[in-house]
Structures are given as structure tokens and as C-alpha cells.
Image 1: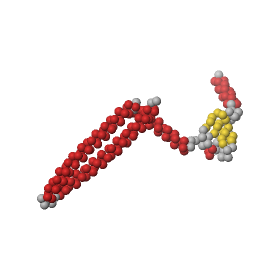
Image 2: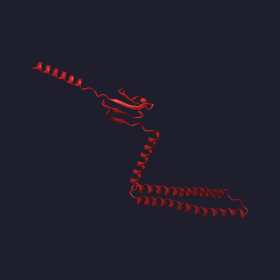
Image 3: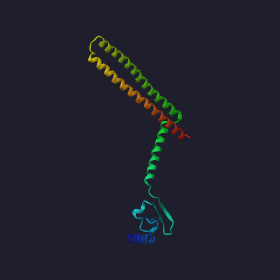
Image 4: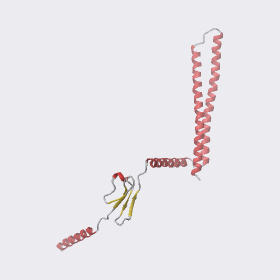
Length: 197
């Protein structure tokens, strides 16, 4: 009985091998365009220099099984990257603002913050101007009395002038930031409005 099952197993294996031999691998052709513009059918595959131009895989009857598109050009790749970046920016914008009114509220908050900084700086500038007038008056009193102006007073006056220059630069920077913020929020508002249509 054991012999018979080994013999049966051998027969089954031979039969399977015979069936596998009858099933042939499909014949495939590769169709591509060569550098002279001619259409080439090749069973070996597509040469590496033509792969980037795209090609088709056909069966033995000439039926197209697969189409491999040409590789994208540098301009297409750049456009794809730009499109992806724009899509990400759009998603971030819609995550940040759910409506045009949200953009308007955020703009108002940011401008109020900048206006507050500018107002504080202008107040500091006025205080420094008053301090400068006081120090100049003291220096004038010394000169009228025929005494030299003390170095500490001259140093204080110089320090006040430096602080005034610094604060004026801060105010100019904040005013420039205000213009940029308005432009940025205007662009965001227009984009959100377009995306929510």
C-alpha cells in the first residue's frame, strides 16, 4: 500500500510537470519610438535610453496590456511641486480660517497689536523728547553761568539721542510690518474666499 502511494505521488508529479510544460509563458512585445521617430516592436524590452520616452507592452496578438507614460519634463516636475505646495498652503489656510470673517478678525487683532506697539513707542519718544529738552536746558544753564557742561550731562544727552534713534527705527519697522500684515491678510482673505466658493 505504501509503494502504491509513492507510485501515485510520482505519477501525479509527472502529470503536473507535463501540464506546466504545456502552459507557456505569454509572449510580450514592447513598442516604443526610437530616436529617429520610428516605431519599434521588441521582445527583449525597451533600451534604457528610450524608457524615459514611454512605451507600451503588447501581447502576441498586438493587444495593449500596459501603457508606460513618458517621464515628466523638468517643467512638469516643477509645476507638480508648485501645485503640491499650493494645495498644502490651501489646506493650512482652511485649517486656520473657516470663513472670510475669521480672516477679518485675525487681521483686526494683528493690526491692533501693532498699533499698540507703535503707540507705546511714540509715547516713549515723547518722554525722551521732554527729557532731552530738560537736559538741554540744564546744559544751557551751565553755559550761561560760564561753567563747562559736565561730562555726565553730555553722556545723558547722547544716550537720550541714541534711544530716540532706536525708538524711531522701531516705529518705522512696526509701520512697515503693518503694511505687510495688511497685504498678507488681503491675500489670505481673497484666497479663502476663492476656496470656499
